[in-house]
Every structure is written in structure tokens, then in C-alpha cells.
Length: 255
Length: 89
Image 1 (cartoon, rainbow over the protein chains, first blue to last red):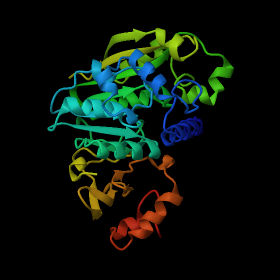
Image 2: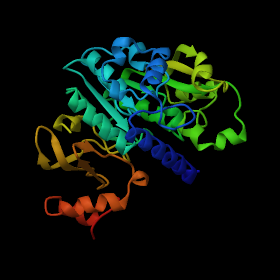
Image 3: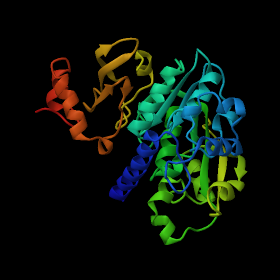
Image 4: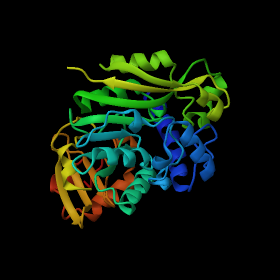
């Protein structure tokens, strides 16, 4: 099992370093890295980014998300925010504006090329309250109870051990802290062929859990779960009709 | 990396906090340095301002050992000789 999990991580890492080094990219299925700017914009709009948000740091928006967690989060000024799987940093930069000078945003990602790209963009655009570090979301390099809000956009499906991710999220959040996740969950069974498809793995499908199983795992980690939204349209617009949806969840660490 | 980040960094393996910071090059931010977990003696490089806090299985000896070699005079001796997951002993 351990070896299989490491294989999954390697496959995902490889796909995303390729995406990071291409100028534009593509989340869904193909992993081809060839989405043009217009398509990225169209996709971003359909998953909930405003025109203003899209213009913030367009180079950081790789069109890899399936929602806009910052928009449906309760991030406040002065908060410490952690983004799980921060990629080129787009959601971190949006969160940065919400936390202001007294807050900070930390982006965690396991792909060197993504972290380097995000770091460069933060410098170029003067996001002084955002920092990126290389790390594994199953083994977060963060102290217990040190984070107010966690956001994550279409990433946890890529992690081989999702319960571990949720347990880690629970550990690093302060009591009363919240996690806002936008992620792909399945609404039907995949074929064996689909499950083995590496592009579907990096494309957020083959590693995704059934909706109920996903929610159960968040609860098992200790969270109180509230579903904020479900987007079934995304199946048609980005995943050629595979039975899945993008789910938006608020998970609260009580006590 | 800003020094302030140390406030919330913990060892990804044993979650120990606070970690030790050794700075080798600093401009506006720390450019190169070493983060050490005093509990398990794992070391994590800071390279090009980015703290690399990956667990053992995602690290590559071929990338990390040259870094330790480069800074072996400035790095704590116990890390150089006994540090995990790689050392120069």
C-alpha cells in the first residue's frame, strides 16, 4: 500500500511539474498543458471567480481549480490562512487581500516547480504576506493549532490517503478554525480502465472518492461538515460527462 | 523565507515545534539556510528563499546531499554527521 501511495504521488508530481513549467495548462483529464488563456478564463468564470479576481494575478491562474474557496470562506483580516496544494498561488493571492497586512497566507505544495513559480509571482506582484513552502499535505510541516482557516482547491482528490490529510488539517487548525474545500467527488463508479489512467489521476478524477465516502472521512477526522454547494454542471463542462461533481465544503473544528 | 514563519513551522515527521533555524545567506529574506528538528535531527534546506519541508520519501539524496556539503562548515556538526534522512558520515 505504501509503495502504491508513493507511486501515486510521483505520478501527480510529475504531471504538475510539467504543468508548472508550461505557460498555460489544463486540469481536466488530458493533463496536456495546452489550455489557452481564453479557456482558462471561461473555466474560471464557470467555477466562481469574478472578473476582478481573474485579473489579480492572471499568470497564477492555471485553470486547475473546481471552485473558489476564498470566496465561500470566512477569511477575516488578520487571519493565518493555509492553502493545501497551492500550485502557482492564485487562491493564496486572493486570500492575501482578505487577511491584509496583519494576516498571513501560507501555500503548501509538493511540486518544486509550482512553489518556485508561486514564489516568483508573489515577489513580482508584491504579495508580502504570502509565503510558499514545499511540503506534503499528508505530513504538514505546521505546528498544532496555528492556523485560522484552511483552503484547498481541487487537490485533496490527488492525495492517496485523504483521511490523513483531513486529520492533519484538523491538527493544524485552532479550535473553532475552519477548512473550506472545493474538490471533485464521484457520483458513480469508474471503470477499471479509468481508475488506472494516469491522466485521469492527475486530472482529479481517478483518485477522487465517492461523495459520501469523502464526507465520512472529513467527519472521521473530527470535523463538523456543512455542504455549501454542489456543481454537477462541471461534469459536462470539464469532464466529458463522467459521473462526478465539484463539492464545496465547510468543515469546522469544534471544541 | 521570512524569519517569522518559524513561529508556525513544525517537523512534518514528528510534529515537533519549535524548530532550529540556521541562516547561511540573508537579504530581505532568508535565501539559504537550514531548518533542523532537534527531536529527530531531520534537516530541511531553505533554498532560493523556499523552505523545503518534504517527508523522507519525497526527498532525493542527489539533490539534498550537495546542499549539506556546501554548508558543512556552517551547519551544526551533529546534523552534518548524524542528520536525517541523509548525512555526510
